[in-house]
Image (cartoon, rainbow, N blue to C red; front, side, top):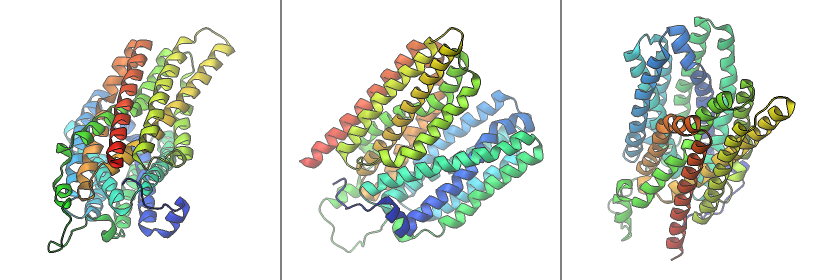
Length: 425
């Protein structure tokens, strides 16, 4: 069953569940450091270290491939060893590697340091997902992931604001100090993770002498690689996850090069996304804790992304001079940002629900590792997909993206309906 456990108000759950409070605190501390650091990374490497932009791009691309592999590896490991201990180690590695950026001087050192950062970041994401899947049940898992996403956006927003200080000062010392503090926050998180209850977050080892139901061995040996339904879910959600790249990469390029809106409009559009996620992620995740609820949410996400693509493209059609056209472009861009952000919220909630409920409890780490890899691959190919479609082809490219998102959403909805029908039987 997907959601048979009675739920309590989220505020009550936060107040009474020590594990949840600890996870949310760790998420906030992590994202404060991440928001500050990654706002500075590219500029630090090019302006302070003096690396060429193409060198930075090559280094970060290689590191991204390491991150994809680590999502799988650490997801599997969390089914075999202590997830709590792994999170401690990964936080220490990430904190030390972030501080290690201060010693980057060339491409080889950049590849080593960036690979360690992304290894710990992506691997830690898979382990955290398995922790949530083990520590909570039913719709609570989706609500908690939604709350963690909200906290993530708050932390990154504050961290990004803090990064404005070294950017304004522009001195090597200001960059070095901020980056050292950001890395130290991950070391603090390692201490906080140590306070998690291993009985809640680590894989449960059954008594080998105890009797097990006839169906138990099947679940225990089930592998995500032999689960076509879950692999299809991973692939389709990875494709839909390219929408993150559309907002982060495609939208700024589109606004600057293909609309008459001022370049400064890009910043408010990104702020709209953050505000919408912070205010509505938890609220709009309600009701997605069942297969049917997840399917409905994904249906909405598909239509919202089609609408967002049409609006982004529409902003490029409006031309001319004067207050009217420019204002119209801004209105259309804001509408696109809202539709796109709502699609992000609803698709994320649907994906969390399905990835938890389609995974056997005994292999939660392995399944979450595979699921996370879908998003990691999507993030890796997103820059190429977005630039070759929307940016290079204009309206036709936006139409291709809209069709791609619609097909991916429809596939996920089909998986949800089949799972719901099988559960009813």
